[in-house]
Length: 148
Image (cartoon, rainbow, N blue to C red; front, side, top):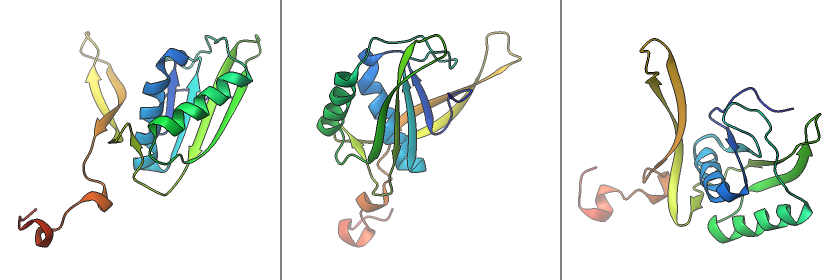
């Protein structure tokens, strides 16, 4: 069962051609919330649009994770289908060995709010921001001679 919407630990991705974006989101969620749920083959509103995937696709995802994430968290990658037979991939990750990096950069998932063009409704948007605030990577003022 798919969640109703994207949130702090859930990302919907339309297809495997956006896999790197999904993995970047995953590291950002892991760094901030220690868990991530990625659904590939699902539109921004949570509707399954389907993808052409098989067991080889799952192996390709795992291989890509090992290439771009500094240390891969505990993940479960599964091929699912909805009631209409449309396939989607679910990647569920958990981990506490932060920071996780994507291609050498550290990200954190944050929520921003914006108004629709009519000015009345507020839109919630989850994005990944580059961060250097990871606890293990801060320098103390003793090490640098600078006050932080």
